[in-house]
Image (cartoon, rainbow, N blue to C red; front, side, top):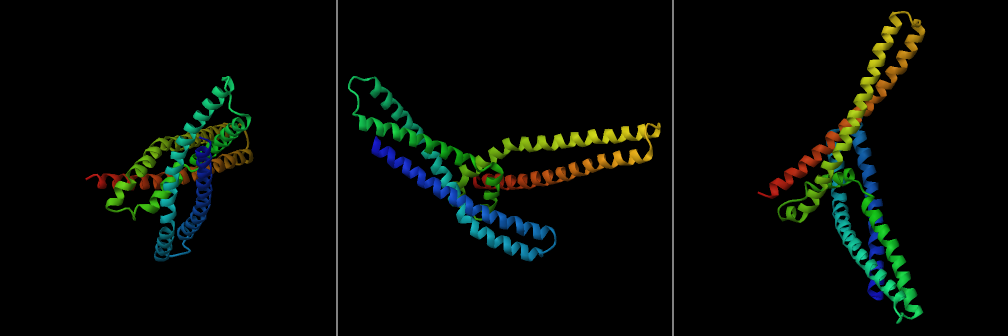
Length: 253
């Protein structure tokens, strides 16, 4: 068990290093993508240039995104195997300590050390699996959508379905944020109406009224900007999810 366990821990460590390096490389491409989008949205590049640059970027990202999902699946498998290994080691260590026929000291120590290493590795694997949110994974799938064709659809069906289902759950939090901002804006509008009434009945002079109104309107403007950014982001992600569903439905016919 010890030799097999050491091999599994080392294998998981290697996969983690590759996963982290891959995410770092993908992050670099994501920054480039964001910059190209910014330049296009501000009119610094034409649509033709934008589409050419995005096409080139997508081509470079595609093999990296595919590798990401492959490594994620591999890490999940290792998470399960590490859990099994740790259970076996705990049983071994416990029964050894309670048995009159104890393992020799050296082997007992090796088991305990392996248990500690396996536990630390398992925590790192679980942390890595949680490090990429569903929004980012949807963006990864967006890169793949145009390249998944024919038989590839079946190979990617489970991956696409899982991300879309996770987005359906996560979407509620985005919708809740939109509703919360809208409530805050409505509350500020109520305060503006109340402020105007208080000014009209002479509760304070125009200078104070203008100062208070400017402060409230500034807050409304800030919330409006937040709301528009969030709604745009939500609509964009919904569009990617819809394309994923179309792919799934098309592949099942």
